[in-house]
Length: 102
Image 1 (cartoon, one colour):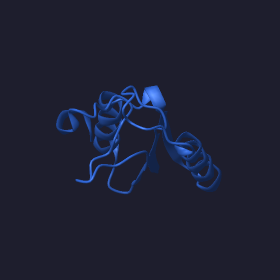
Image 2 (tube, helix red, strand yellow; image 1 turned 30 degrees about the vertical axis):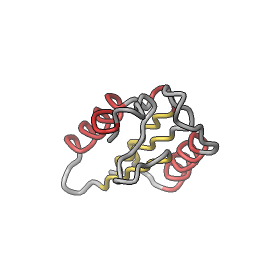
Image 3 (cartoon, one colour; image 1 turned 90 degrees about the horizontal axis):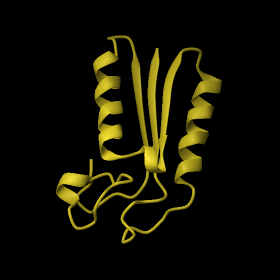
Image 4 (cartoon, helix red, strand yellow; image 1 turned 60 degrees about the vertical axis):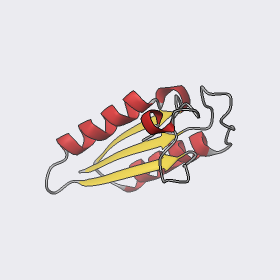
């Protein structure tokens, strides 16, 4: 089985983080492509307000916990990143990157 999680964030709760165009569309399109191409896919899409730090962490933990030895895990992120390689989620706070990014 393929276990896939697609995260796309273009709008952020912190108004100091610039919006991105295409991230939500990219996450949904990649999910659709994988679902159309592979026979057994467990896919979840989290976009914008759904893609909070808590929700993304939970999705990753659950996916990795449930994955079996023969499963493939696909993780896709379409969002901002930081200079120190952190992933920016919907509720990231620009003034507190250490505790609000992945």
